[in-house]
Length: 408
Picture 1 (cartoon, rainbow, N blue to C red):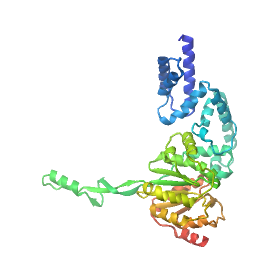
Picture 2 (cartoon, rainbow, N blue to C red):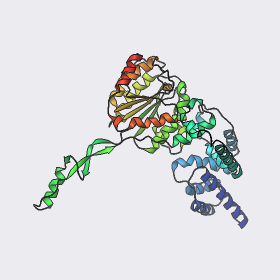
Picture 3 (cartoon, one colour):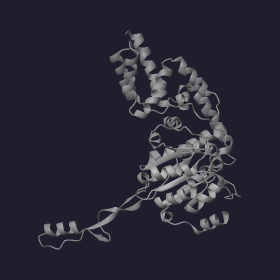
């Protein structure tokens, strides 16, 4: 390879690494230099060898593979993917993604990374100008926190997605049955005390103590994905992805007409890949709702595995059941007795005149410990208050029980 060709190849590899870095992959100068050395070692005669050389240096995690493959095919001139990229830049309606496209998603951030630097700078300048013009009005961030997900525009939904990805759910640490050595406490460690006495050869040895270990309880989320919950469930999936990757022992199951465990898919660090795999795994999105049948399947197949060690259950649903509450009360009672705390998040609570008239809501409400709204960012932040140490004690509020009785 002559000097001119080597310089052009180095420039292209540098621009490709810049695209990956703009798309979110951790690609620094050291990786760029290592990529150039790898490419010079394998040559450019074979496309697969060239691809493997860049891949071995520029990515570190398995979840970065999908984004790298798409960027490689697009940057090194694949006309079919370039067509899809142009379609991605056009406005589109939120809908269910086809199965073949869901398995190989084309993230919007890759489209932004392929945008020329001048256009990105102009877009950033426009956003900054709008923010300065609105300085004397209410904060856009504050307005979005209180705005309903269902009434948001596409641009507002994009901003809220970024805010939701930064939310965390602080689960309190609770005492377990296991103990550990401690400097002081209420339980004497007899074995350690006897060892200290024996090694002291008759000298008086201080008592050894033990205390209970503390650990946050498991969190199980049951999320309704029926047609009436479509907009809310899509936004809440981003929140569930954030808390699933923030801590261990979080399990997420979706239900409509059937139950689907998506915990393994949400473990993907890349949110675009995770949501796409969820869309491919769920076959009853935006359909009907059979809450009683789905809870029956959960109690029969998943309850003993997931609800051990005092698990907390988040039930996200509007309570509108296609089976008109058939068998729902029995399954809700069984679920509430199997967990430490059952919290119901219902978007219908956003209405001031909400009444529990549907049969499904009347059957579920008596077995719930907390009944909270979930329709905007502010309601997600208020959810953290339900996980305070004071609220972790088992027992339903008297006001909630009185309200359930009056609504029956």
